[in-house]
Amino acid sequence: MLSSAWSAAVVGVEARLVRVEADTASGFPRFLLLGLPDSSVRGSEGRLRAALRNCGFGFKWDRRLTVNLSPAGLPNLGAGFDLAIAAALLAADGELRTEPLASVLLVGELALDGALRPVRGLVPMLLAARAAGLRDAVVPRENAEEARCVRGLRLHAVATLPAALDIAGRLDRPSPVEFASAPAADADPPPDLADVRGQALPRRALEIAAAGGHNLLFTGPPGSGKTMLARRLPGLLPPPDPDEVVESAAIHSAAGLPVFRLLRARPFRAPHHTASDAAIVGGGPFPRPGEVSLAHHGVLFLDELPEFRRNVLEALRQPLEDRHVTVARGRGVLHMPARFQFVAAMNPCPCGHLGDARHACRCTPGQVRAYRARVSGPLLDRIDLRVEVAAMAFAQLGGPAGEASASVAQRVAGARDLQRQRQGRLNGELRTAALRRFAEPDAEARSVLEAAVDRLGVTGRGHDRLLRVARTLADLEGDPRVGGRHVAEALQFRHTGPPA
Image 1: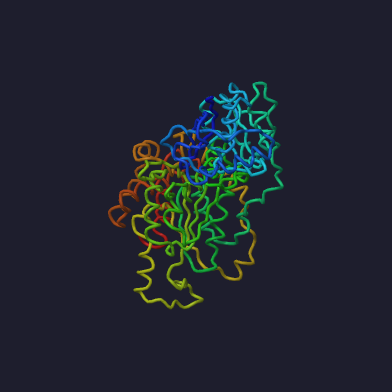
Image 2 (image 1 turned 90 degrees about the horizontal axis):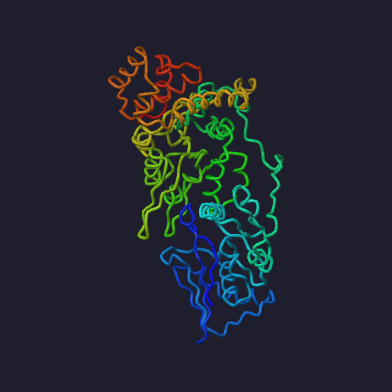
C-alpha cells in the first residue's frame, strides 16, 4: 500500500512542508529512504525499528519499504521526521487510518523506547503548516511552550509515539492543549536607567536612539559605563507586538534557541569579539541565522568593537543598510531578516586612557591610528550617533539616581507613535525619498546642513542620517518641523567620538 503524512523542514529561518510518502511491497527486505536526507534522517530506520517494537506495534520489516521525502530536492535536516515516517509506514500497513493524516502536521524525534524528543525549528514549521491550511499539529511535549506563540492551529503536545498516533489517526481529535500564560515573576526585570549616575550626554543619546531606531556608538575609557548604558536600551523600547514576537520566535526556534523570553521582551544579543562572520551574519554549509537575525526587532550590541575581525565588521554594512541578510550558497539563495538596532562600544585607544586626565595614555600616535582604523569609515558612516562617555569622578558616582527607564520609555513611546502615524516606520528606517518628504528642514536647518556638508565634510549618507536624527529630536519635542536647533544637536552627536 501507499500512504503519506505531513512534516516540515527548516531552511534558513523559514520552513517548508514535506510530504512523507511510504510504500510497502513484497520483495527482498530493504529500507530505502529517498530525497535529500542528512545523516540524522538516514538513521531513522534504527530508531523506528526499536520504537515500534518497544511500543508494541507488530510492524513487519521483512519486505521492501520505500520512504520518500518530497520535494526531493529540498535538504532535509534533523530527526524531526521520525514521527511522520512512523505514521506513514503504519498507515501503509493498514494499522492507521490514512484520511486523518491529510490535515495534521507530525513533528518529533523518536527515542528507542518510543518517547518523543524535542526538535529545532518548530515555530517556522507551525507557521508553514498554518499557511498551507493544515488544521492540527502533533508536537513533542517539550516543545509545548515554544509552540504556544503560534495561533490558528490546534496544537497537541504529547510525550510518546502511541499517544501521537492516537491523535493523528482520528478525525474527531480531542481538544488541543491549552498553554497557560507564563508568570511574570519568571522573567528578570530589564536593567533600569536610574542606575546610571551622571552621564547626561550619553543618556540623551540613548533616548534619541530608542525613539528613532538609530545606531549608536559609545567611546570612552574602561569602566566609564559604556556597557552599562548599552544594556539599558531594551528597557527604553516598547514591548514587541504579537507579529514581532512570532517573527523573532521563528528565528530563534530555527537556530535551536529558547523562545520563552521573547514573549515578554525584545531580543538583546551581545556576541563575543571572537565570533566569526558566519556567526554574526549567518551562513554555514546549511545556513543558519546569525546574530544580526537573532537580534531582529531587538538590539545587537558589539562590545570592544575594534577587537572584532575586520571581515566581520565589514559584513555588517549590508544588513545595517538593507535590514536583511542575503546568504548565497550552491544550493540556493536565502534571505533572512535583520531589522535590528545596532549599539557598539569601544575604547579611544589600545590602552583605553587617551583623554583620561587621571591615567596617562601609553599609546603612540601610530598605535592610536591603527587601532581606530580597525573600524572602517564606511561602517562608522552608518552609525547615526557617536558619543564620548567620560570617566566619572567620585562625586558623580555618589550623586542622585538618574531618571528611571519607565519615564524615559514614555517619551520614547510617544515619539515612536508620531512616526508610525506619520510615515508608518521609524525615522532610522526612512529611505531618501521618504526622508525628503517627512523631514523637510526649515531655512535655519538648511543653513546648518550646508555648513556640515561643505565645511565639516559630512558625506551624502551622513547628511541623510543627520537629518533622520534631527527628525527624531523634533518628534521628542512634538515639533512638526525640523529646525536649526535639531540639526545642530544631531550634528553634535554625529561628530563626537572617532572620526569616520
